[in-house]
Image 1 (spheres, rainbow, N blue to C red):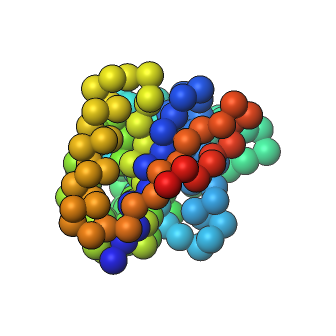
Image 2 (cartoon, rainbow, N blue to C red):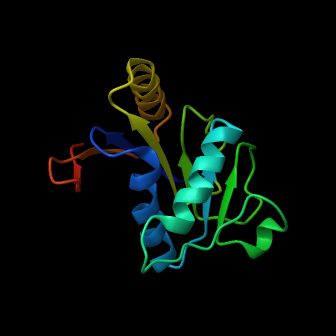
Length: 147
């Protein structure tokens, strides 16, 4: 069964926080599926993933053959690129996460609606017996496990 990790953003912008997590996923040999809430968010992510660091390359796509892409950006359900890790942004519906090793729900703690949705999904995950972890962004920008 997939683990569900909650990432509580307090300082970083989502796109900048996502890129290093995608890098770590690829270093593990995992493919990643990024499910965003809107085409505009996916446009933003597409740009940031190409440019967020001069010495980094994050291969990804939104169009073409998903099976060829280690990182697939979408607003649709399913797992078209055979990813091991799912990143959920902007309240995107998780659907069935059982086909993933891990699902990561990233939310902006400065947005009350996002905070409430994350709390609701945490309670539901616990009720469903899903192993859930809560990670909070530290003052130094590092992720610290809180629960």
